[in-house]
Image 1 (cartoon, helix red, strand yellow):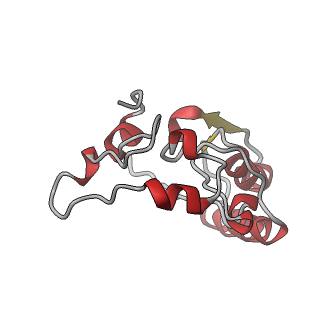
Image 2: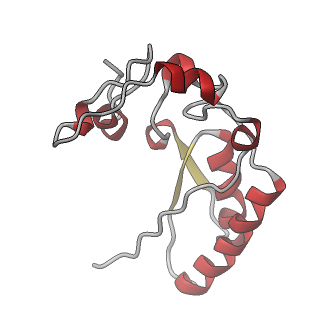
Length: 136
């Protein structure tokens, strides 16, 4: 049986306008960030109609706030899951973006970018982020 999968990302969050690193840092959506979520809710509801729907979201505050109007519009509960979090930036989360930029180790050109460690204590590689396994 074929299924449609819709992938939605949150829009503007307070860490964006405050110049802070997001990662696992729990921030709210701004008013500007809430508007797209409402529009997306309408569009997804139009696409799925009365069909069965499952809604999964990261348990981070901004992702849950994005999922909330979609869940309400579709009449389902969003299942909030830590495994759907974006990549962790370890000790950098919530700090000024400039702090991270001073310590960032850029990924080398080539094929092993999934395993590159950016040099931030507690940060995840992309592979660890995708697998849900603990950071190295």
